[in-house]
Amino acid sequence: MEFEINDEEIEILLQDLLDNYGYDFTDYSRASLKRRINRLFMLDKFPSFSLFRKQIQTDSTYFRRFVEEITVNVTEMFRDPAFYRTVREEVLPVLATHPFIRIWHAGCSTGEEVYSMAIMLQEAGLLKKSLLYATDLNPGVLDRLRKGIFPLRFIKQYSENYIQSGGKEDFSRYYTAKYDWAKFDEQLAAKMVVATHNLVSDRSFNEFQLIFCRNVLIYFDRNLQDRALQLFDESLDTLGFLALGAKEQLKYSSIYKKYRQLDNKDRIWRKIT
Amino acid sequence: MAENHVKATPQLIVIGGSAGSLEVILKVIPALQLHLPVAILLVTHRKPSNDDILVDLLNTKSNWPVKEAEEKEPVLPHYIYVAPADYHLLLEKDHSFSLDVSEKVNYSRPSIDITFESAAEVYGPSLVAVLLSGANADGVEGMKRIRRLGGYCIVQDPATADVEYMPAQAIAQGVANTILSPEGIAQFINELFTAG
Image (cartoon, rainbow over all chains, first blue to last red; front, side, top):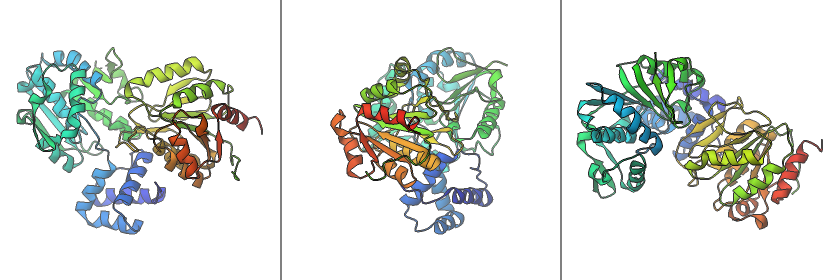
């Protein structure tokens, strides 16, 4: 792929987004952002940078598409099954001791991992007393989450992930297949609170016993990573759990000393003070 | 091959491979002289569960320290980095690694094209890329970009490759500066820093 939009033009676009829409991507890592922006520019066949820029500035529908396309919305159910096995075996028993369970999925995209968690809560008999807050900066992906309809072609993989994560049920009990789609049980979605939230600019809005933020921090620079982690720290009860993506770390952040990683290598930390 | 010379002192060597490339990597890496003033990055297609196995295996075969590339980690000479499975690996302008879990490219994540293109942007003429055995054309587009930005492209001789499709595609599309056997690749890299 040829990169048509150079570094200087990327900075111009990022400044436009901030000035016109209040979306701040200036602390995102550039390599991925540059590739995503160039990919969209090619995909939508813009003849020039100035027309691309103008479309984003003046057409709020296109702006929404732009944000949804430059942020990564690839996710799957029970992503990294061993991680979910740890959640099932080590985190759920602790959550069970609470009268009421609040969980935040920050940057949840289309919500496959939120549904995964709801399924595990139901199997542990905890869903009734739980609320799963699902947030993302893209309103479009949250619409899909609310519907709970996912492409049927991925279900085989999800079903395998589910079994590897320690699931004992017949996975097909959780969805109804129709044409090329699988619609998940509405009882799962009933316990989800869905809202837009931007980790760059929005604040803490509740206290949780478990926060998931998986494969979001990799797109932030170190400074923004630290700010997001401080936001999670403010939003997490003492002895609460923070769950990150398979290649994400706490060790470079200012909150590191307040947390202890679970004994296996999974990326789950417990707030100890 | 008219432009058969490296234009600047290499700072990064990226080696991409797919089916049949592990055997080649296990020939090339142990044959490298110690303390070459360059970073080496391996981008290979493989199952997510095999991450630690490859790093551990290479550590037993090489005197260079071998480690998985971590997000935001600075790229340092004298290290061999392995791209983690199931993530794309990119290079930032400050010579650090970035990870990305966006859609697969060429049915692959990591995609060799993505790393080649991103490294070309950052390293320009001080990049050397190597494309090994494999069953798809991942890496060929990336090599085109490396060539345009002044980098140097080595392609494994398809006659020595387990699966010749990937190197053969690179050669057919004219991106190879040189075509070498596995032994030749190791010798070439060693001589980059001794021939002066």
